[in-house]
Amino acid sequence: MKPNMYSWAAEEHSLYRPVSDIKEATVEKPLEELYNVKVERKVSPERLKELGVSRWSVWKTGKSKLPWDWQVDQLVYIEEGEVRVVPEGSQRFMQFMAGDLVRYPKWFEADLWFNGPYQERYRFRAYGDD
Image: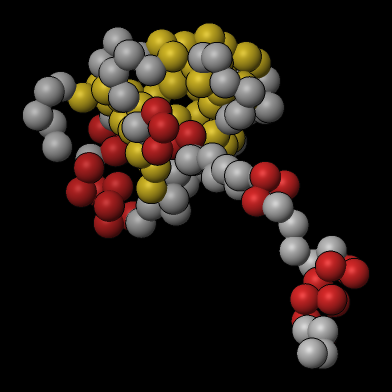
């Protein structure tokens, strides 16, 4: 009986490995999904008008780091600059920039990192404001 050439090649070149050698691949969920932060990128003028963004309050800052916690849902439209949002206890961050509309959920806690001039329009959302 002739030896099986494929099993010989597998043994010779270690093509087959025991299942215990295979490492589990992990896929991290986006932070926005984990923390229920909603973002719309490059929001259209029509959408801004629909939301009445021009009537929202304005807040601005320069290069800084701020610890922040949201006591209510907040909707933010970033007019200038960018912010890195590091959720409490996380090593990862979310990044939002001018043109983004971001909804932060009630009770969310994070450090906000601003690398330069930043301006946003914001409004607080009451229950049922969808």
